[in-house]
Length: 123
Image 1: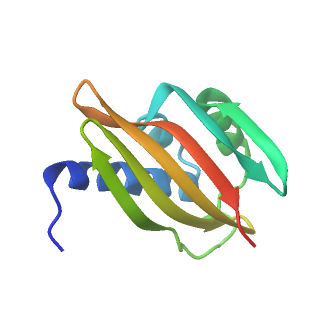
Image 2: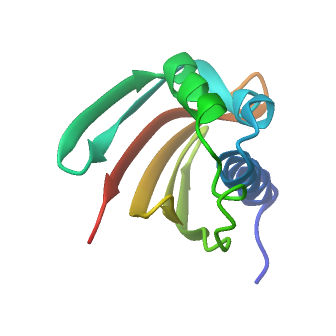
């Protein structure tokens, strides 16, 4: 399938997102999140709200899926681009959860960055 250049750039960001959370690579994640990004979701029916810095600290201090010898099963479901904004729907099974993420991305100074992460665990 042929993708636009912008679509390819977004896929590269998502690939780094997947690698960052799978490997616990905070520097990789920091490079793709906007410094003011927010994360919303639920974990086991508990509301979850964090600033990106808090989230990165959690990632840094937990055992990564790779360290847990999990198989990499993360995948892109869809990407929709509207001008300098985009939404990506992802399936992110890891750490015993069946996460679905909706990432909002914006093109800032020519670079696609994640500005918001909305996620949930589906049984």
